[in-house]
Image 1: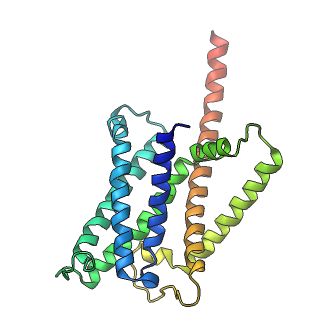
Image 2: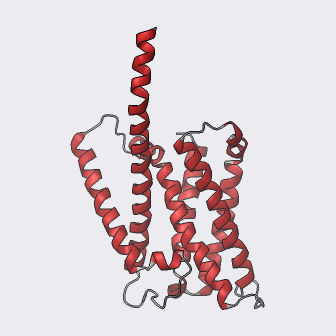
Image 3: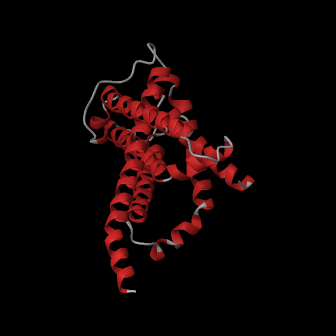
Length: 237
C-alpha cells in the first residue's frame, strides 16, 4: 500500500470518528461539538479533493446495482452534509460569537435530522467499500490464505454486532430521529459515556453488514442469471 493511500484512509477514519464525537453534544458541550464539526468539514473537503476524479467517471460508470447504489449513496451523503453544514452555520454561536437569528428550535431539529442521516448514509457508504477495507486489514495482518474457522468467527461477530445494532436503534430512537419526530429521549451521559458510543458503533456495524450482504446477494443473483446465458453462448460457439 502506498503512503498516500494510507494517509487518505487515515483521514477518512478520523472523519468517521469526528461524526461520532459530534454526537456527544450533551456530554462535552457546544464548543467541543462545533470544533468537531469544523474539523469534520475540513476533512470532507480533503476527501473531496482526493476523490475529485471520481465525479468525472459517473457518466461512464457501468450501470450495475453496486455502481448505481454507490452513485445514489454518494449524492445523498453530499446532500446530507450540505444540510448539516448550512444548519451548522445558521445555529452556531460558539465559534462565531454571535447568536444567529435563525438558531431556533426548527433549525436545530433539521440539524439533528441531517446528522442522523449522515450517520446512516456514511455506514452504507462504508458497507459498499467493505471488501476493500477487509483487503487492507488482511494486508496489515499479513493474512494471505483463507481460513474457514476465521471466516465463521467473523460472521458470528458480524451477526452479534448487527443484532446489537437493532437493539441500539431502539435505544437511541433512530427511527424517530430519521423522520424528524419529536422525542424527549436523550442519552444520559452521567450514567454512561461508553454505552452511547457503543450503541452508535453497533448501528454503524448494522448498516455496514446490511449493505455488504445485500451487495453479495445481488452479486450472487447476477451470477446465477448470467450462467444460463454463458452456457448457451458456449453451446453455439
